[in-house]
Figure 1 (cartoon, rainbow, N blue to C red):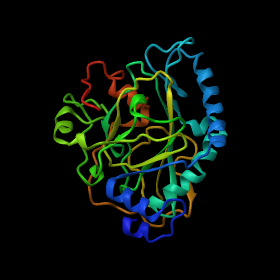
Figure 2 (cartoon, helix red, strand yellow):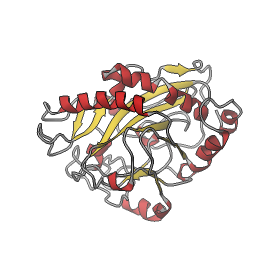
Figure 3 (cartoon, rainbow, N blue to C red):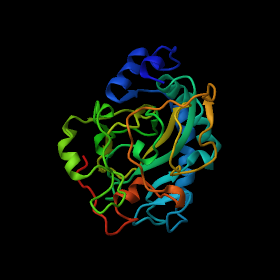
Figure 4 (cartoon, rainbow, N blue to C red):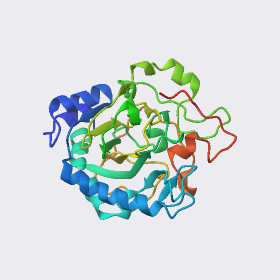
Length: 304
């Protein structure tokens, strides 16, 4: 479905100006989508999983742990597939966030994945400049990610940065010089991409960010030790079909959560680089960018 066709459908949550801004810039921010009571319920569940992570000593199917994680000082980088582990997360994924997705991909929406990321100011929470679609190519570029801020997000705690208009540019190679997957742009591409124009999002808890799968984005390390959590849910138009293994297979992947299943696939003529074969497993972007899965790889340190 083209942007023009999407915009021809009535909006559910976003204003027409917000929808147009998303298609122009590759991202949009919406303040105060969720209220204090809803956030308090979510944070109670988040605290429960943080407590459970204290028992773990290595990353696994549920928790992605940063080096230095311990029971006394938990450093949970990611709760993997949160919608699989607690019903509240699935309720959130299929609630108003799915309506936001419908405003931007069209009335027929499929769920792709969820994750809950943290930043702890421990030297392992920088996210280098990258694009999402190279992780999970589809027949078109409708996939997007909705980030729900569970606490205030500022530059001090590693605000997300988006390069406006980059979704309309090229797709970058996210392998290093040795051909190892790194999940981020290499130094040369970062230097020629004008990341000085990046917009860093500072917003209050309850706000959302939405970015397109082609938009270049990243986040600096946090300077606060509060573990700033960000709940991320990814969606796509029902006419977008993946053609590589899913990096995080889980219940509800590919499920239609708004509208109807597609009768035809929409094929965007622009090609997409192919990621590694994820059928044997995937840890997280943190592990890939830090070279934890490939100790001989070179990390691109030119993220803001």
